[in-house]
Image (cartoon, rainbow, N blue to C red; front, side):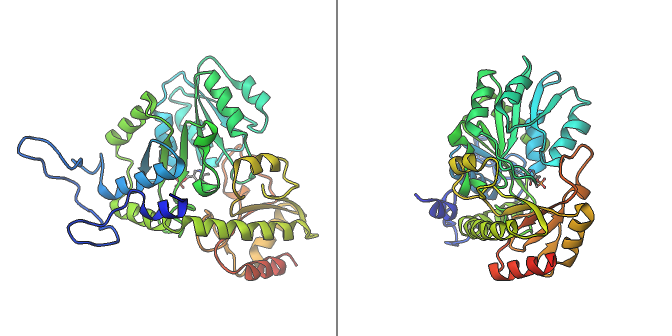
Length: 372
Ligand SMILES: *Cc1c(COP(=O)(O)O)cnc(C)c1O
């Protein structure tokens, strides 16, 4: 089955009791037990499982080519659950330019619990190899990264991780499984903020993990979720599943428009540099071509004249909206450095653009007037 068909059918079924084509939302927190004490339908209590959540998880596992998936109440708590499955004294390697929320998590929450972390330039395999320690249990990558859109060598880093007996997790939020499937390159776990492209309409927070195999580590993460309850509500799962159905068409249109806009911005005299993996000027363009089917809907631009000039450009947009997040139908623009945490590597003159589904001509005219 092709991906567009999977998005609509995988894990979904016509409701047998009513014939309803769109899934009903199952709000019940508890499910009936048979006289013999069994649960033949597989549901017991909604912290452990719910039909809307199962449908979403089955779809995500199929899209990423994994054996199982878990849906969470946010992208952040999906990553947090993976870190909670490690022990005090374990070592984690994370990208120097990691999504700032995960940096804060490692520094403020897990360091006091005894988890060691090194922040490494993931574009350099030599530096990744040098950062390995006897107690390294997990490597984290984000490719393309947020917000500098650098590209990591998934296959190369997976090999390094496995030589060490460590797991590799890849944040696939920006490309989505439409453009990149990390498990095909040897990655063990995939994490998503479904809040972004998968939900796709800026109206539902969520996260997900997908595994390439049923390991002891995976079972431990499942146990943590079941005991703690960082689960999305049935309605949030329903909204996310609704968003998934159009994911391929949205991501392809956004990618095509982003590439056009990146090329236009690259020639603009007010721009110092455009960071977009689809441009031949991008330092890892060849790697992006190998791993990705297209280059996604995010563009970062470095504006000439520093932070003040960048904020000035963002102040003038009319079609773009000044707001954080990305992946929705509305195009967004954001000065990243001013919202990130201590230790952020984001240049002060960087603006991140999330290309939505408005007409390309209107977006181009808006950027032209904002830069003029
Ligand atoms: C937004 C985001 C997250 C966090 O997801 P939330 O749903 O906001 O908790 C993690 N990683 C990346 C790359 C993100 O863009």
